[in-house]
Every structure is written in structure tokens, then in C-alpha cells.
Amino acid sequence: MDRLTVELGALVFQALVTTLLALVYWWLWRQQRRPYFAVWALAWAAFAARLGFISAFVVTGRHFWLFAHQSATGVTALLLLWAAIVFARGARWRRRYLWLGVVVVGWAYIAIYVIRDMRTAGLSAAIALAAVTLGTGFVFARHARRRESLGAGVLAWTFLLWGLHHLDYPLVRSLGSAVLYGVFADVLFIVAATVGTLLMVLGDGRKALEARSHQLEQLTGLLVRAQEDERHRIARELHDEAGQILTAVKIELDLEGRTEAGEMVGRALAQVRDLSNLLRPSALDDLGLSPALHVLVDEFGRRAHVDATIDQARPLPPLSDEVEVAIYRVVQEALTNVARHAAARSVHVQLGAANGSVRLEVCDDGRGVTGEPTPHLGLLGIRERVTALGGTLEIEGAPGRGFRIEVVIPVVARA
Image (tube, rainbow, N blue to C red; front, side, top):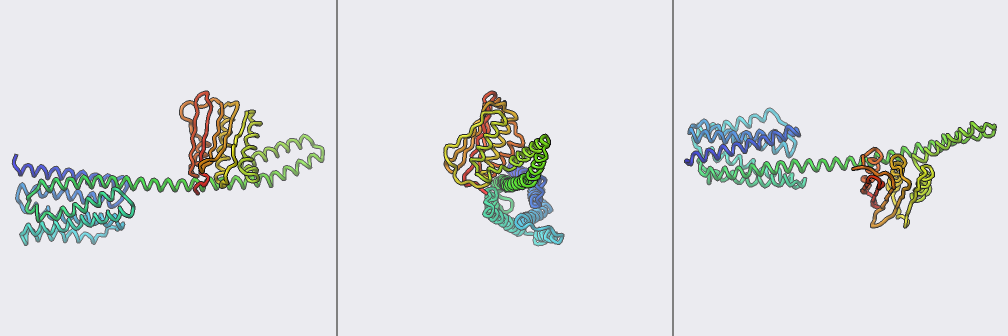
């Protein structure tokens, strides 16, 4: 196999690899619709075309293919430059920019057909391509420093070294010499550019997802706070307005001797008070978390006919309103689940604080669950409450071995 065949095979291989890089950028554009990905796809397609043109020139010796190669090199440089500008500044395309392409093609024509100096043509193309490649590297370097992007850092070093590599064309690879060396180096840079691009896209996607998750956490916190405020308002309205009216009606009925009607109003009044207490327990606002939990557990035991106990070994440190409400709602939801699903004879609530966190555990001796607990609105709600405060929620259950909920929330919960 002669040297010409080997070099042509190497150029074809490089063209295929470059085409794959163009397809990667085209796929990224189809997925994300970011203009610079489309421009990079066109730039690498032009780069692959120039490799085909120089291969045709090596085979035929016709100057037309050399002219096409020089024109494609200039167009590649312009596209790389435009992609870097769009990536760095979000610039928009204008039709007048087409004149730059005309200038590049015109210079290639003058160098090949007028000056008839291939060294001059090759040197000018190499300098233009190297300058644009180096500029692209600096753009990625700035992006890497600003966004702390590993992928952008890889791309920065790739394009900077690739730009220096383009400058060795008039020194080492003039007039088609050292083709295998150039192909080998270019393929390495193309692979590095592909890896760097994918790392940058994945890194930017991960950061965008983290930012979105943080926004959702903030929104969840605002919704929970708004929900508690609305519950507080409705509970106050029920207690102050409906409760007082029903009390007045009951007094009037009792004074008139209408005992049966008075008892009915009394039951309605009790239901209004229960609903008000369910929406926002007055004990939590008036007495604090620990007394409110004792009242909640005792009333649940009497109402559900379950042996309900609460254990608190030490006084709790000062807690924010959000933490107190979250703990109360967790116990409230856990006891509701015991009444609805557990068929338990006893339930135990344990509350304490250690290592800068409040720990809550609710256990019952009911039927438990088979497999993973099925998430429902109540469990999802308390999970959102706990995680929004920087805490953790663990749920365990086994058939015939009861159900356990454990919550740990930092005393100084995040806002």
C-alpha cells in the first residue's frame, strides 16, 4: 500500500469523525434549539467538506479543488467565529454578514488563480483558522471561569491547543507534507471537542435542574406558609363568628326550653369547634408545641379508642413557627393514617432534640404495609413540609409489624 493511499484513507477517516461531530451539534440543536449549536454544526460540516476537497486535490491535482478547500477553510473560520459570538453574547444573524463569506471566497480565488502561490493561500487560511480557533478557546475559557463548567474548561484547552496546531501548517505541513501527523492531531482534538461539548451540556443541564429544584422548594415553602395562614384565618372566622352565633342561638333555645333544638345546635357548635381546631389548633398558638401535641394525642386516643401515648424526655429548644407547625402536622397526619388504615391497638409518639435537630417518631402496632408504602397526598404533603425545612423523613412498615414515621428537622431550619 503506497503512501498516497494511506494519507487519503486518513483524510477520509478524519472527515467521517468531523461529520460525526457536526451531527452531535445538530442533535444538540434539535434538542435544545440554541442557535450556536446549529452554527457549530454547520462549521464542522464545512470543516469535513474542506477535507474532502483537499483529498480530491491530492488525487487529481486540479486547482479547482484547492480553491474549494481554501474557500471551505475560510467559511469554517467564519462559522466558528460566529458561533463563538452567538455563544458569548447571544448575537443575532444579519444578512449583511454574507459579505464576509464573499470576501473569503474572493481571497481564495485571488490566491489560487491570480497570485498562483499555494504557500500564500495556505498561510493565510491557516492564520485565519488558527485565530478563530484561539478566539473560540478564549470564549470557552471565560465561560468556564464564570460558570465553573468542567466541559467548558475542556473545550477551552482543546480549542487553544488546536489553534496553535493550525499554525504549524506553514512550518511542518506545507504543501501536503506530514498529512498523517496532522490527521492524527486533528482527530484527537475533534474527540476532545465532542467530549467537552457533552460535558458542558450535561453540566449546564444539571445546574439548571438544581436551580429549578431550588425554585420549587421556595415555591413549596411559600405555598405551605400561605396554606397555614389561610387555615389560621378560616379557623379564627369559625371560632369568632360562627361559634359565637351558634352559642347565642343555643342560649336562646335553652332559655325558651327548647331542649332538643338546643342539643342539635350544641352538636353543631361542637363540630364547628372541632373543625376550627383541626384547621389551626388554638393550643399550638396559646400554649406551644408540647402541650398542643399532648392534647392532640389524648383527644385522638379517646376518639379512636386507641391506646395513644406521647413521650418527651427533655424540654425542646426554642423552635421557629414553621418547625412547630411542621411537627404538629406530621403527628396529625400520622394519627389520621392510624385511624384510617392501621387497625392498631396502640400508637406511641416520641419527641426529643439532640445534635441541633428535633427528632419525632410515631409508631403503631397495626397491620403495616406490604412492600413500599404507597404515597398519597397526606404523606407527600408532610414530606414537602419537612424537606422544605432541610429535614429528613423516613417511613417504614412491614405486614403485621406496624408502621413507623421518623422525622428529623434542624432546630435552626432554613428559610
